[in-house]
Length: 633
Image (cartoon, rainbow, N blue to C red; front, top):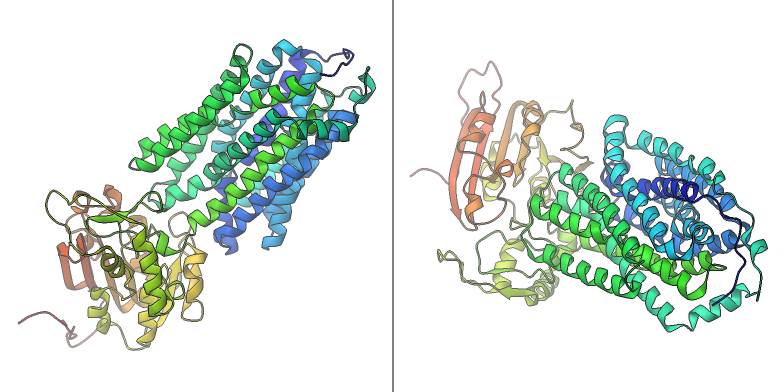
C-alpha cells in the first residue's frame, strides 16, 4: 500500500542468527518464570496473587510499551531500542532477586521486564527482518526467528530449574539477568541506518498510519484473535506448574510440561512460518485457534495423569507461538514496512491485554474460595462439574496436598454457609450410580455440607486426651486449620505448618503459624520438640524422620490418612499417596502403640489407616494409663 526505496540490506544469515539469539534470550528467560512462583512466595511469605499480579503487570507493561518501542525502532533503528531493553531486562531480574515487598517485586518483574520485553522481542526484531528480507521470504524468516525463541523456551526451562536447584532462586535470577546483557552486543550486529532516512515516496505520518489501521476491519479481527492467544497461553504458562503440584503431581511433571511446550513450539512456529509462504495466512490462524480450543477442552474433561499432561503440553506447544509469524506477516502484507514495528506493537498490545486478564483469571483459579473447589471424598453419585470446578481431586476438603479447604472466615455464619452451599449445590451435576451401589443416596447439598464440616477428625478428638494438658501440639499440613482451632480451644499451644500463606492466613492470632515448603525445602522446625504431632489426610514419607524427631519424651503421634484400596473407589489413586498395609506401624517402631486401625471407613467411604502412639519417657516406674475412649465392652 506504500512505496519505499530498497534499503541497503544486512546479510540474511546475520539478521537471522542475531535476531534469533535475542529472541531466545528474552523469551526463554521469561518462559520459566512459573518455576519461581513457589520458592519466592514461600520464602517471602507472599500469597500467589502477589506473584501473579506482578507478571500480569509485566504483560500489561509489555503491551503498552510495545507501540512506543516500535515507533522508536521504525524511526531510529532497532539497535538503540534493543540495547536499552537488554539493560532493563537485567535490571528487572536483579530487582526480582532482591525485592522484599510486593511493590518492589512488581516494579522489577512487572514494569522493568515488561518494558524490556517490548523492545527486544518480536515487534522490533520482525521490523528488522521486514526491512532486510525479501517479501516472498518474510513469513519463513519470521518462522525461523519464532522457532529460535521457542527453542529458547525449551532450553531455558530445564536450565532455570537446574539453576534454582543448584544455586537457589535468588542467584538463579542474577545469573539469568547477566545472560540478558548479551542482548546488547547481539543488537550491535543488527545496527542499521535509521529506517526513516531510507524511505522515499509518499510520507505517511504516525497518526495517519494509526487511523488507517484502526478503521481496517481485518486489522481489528487480527487484534481480537491475538487477544485470545494471549489469554490462553499465559493462563496455561504461569499456573500450570502450581496446578499440577496441587493435584499431587511432582515438580518433574511440571518442568517436563513446560519443556515440552517449548520443544514442540520450535516445530509449530517454524511450520506456521513455512506454510505462510504457500497458504492463506488467515486460514492458518483460524486452524490454530480451533485446534487450541479442542486441546484445552480435552485436557479439562479427561482424567489427569502425567501422560495426559505430556500429550496436552506437546499439542499446545505446536500451537503456542505459531500464531506469531502469520499474524505479523499479515500486518506487513496489508500496511507495508514503514510503520510495521509500531503497528505490530499495537497488535501485540491486544495480546498482552489478554495475557493480563489470563493471569488475573488464573490467580482466581488457583485460589478460588472452597465453595467452588469442593472435593468429594465419598463415592456419592454427586460430583463437581468440570464446567464450574477447579479441582478434580476426590479427596476430602482437609486434604493436605490438594489444600482445597474450608476455613471459618470463608464459611462465615450458618446462614452464610447455607447460601454458599446452595450456590455450590446448583453447580453439581448428577452422575450415574456406581456399579457397586456404593452411593450415599443423599441430596447434593447434604453431601456437600458433610464435606464442609469443620469438625476435627474423630480420631484426633478421641485420643487428644493422651496429650499433656496445656502441652504443645504441631499440626502438619494444617491447611485452613480445622485441627489448629479445635486443639487451641482445648487449651493446647498449637503450631501449624503449611506451605500456603493464603490457606493459613485466618489462623494468625489463633496459633503459631509457620509457612514453609515441607516437601521441597528443609524441615522448618529442626530444633523444636512437641508434646503431640498431628497429621491427617497427608502423606510425604521423606518427612517421617523429622516427625519422629519432633516428638518430645512422652509426646503423642496422631496420624490418619488414606490407605491402599482407596484407588478402587476414588482419589488419591497413586501409590505414593497411599499407605501400604501396616505401614504406620513401621513409622511408629519403638513407640508405644496405643491404638491402630487399618481398614475401610464407610462414612465417608474410604480406605484409611490410623495410629495413636506415644514416645514414652525413659525411667517411668509405673506403666502409664492410656485412656481408650470409645473402645472396649
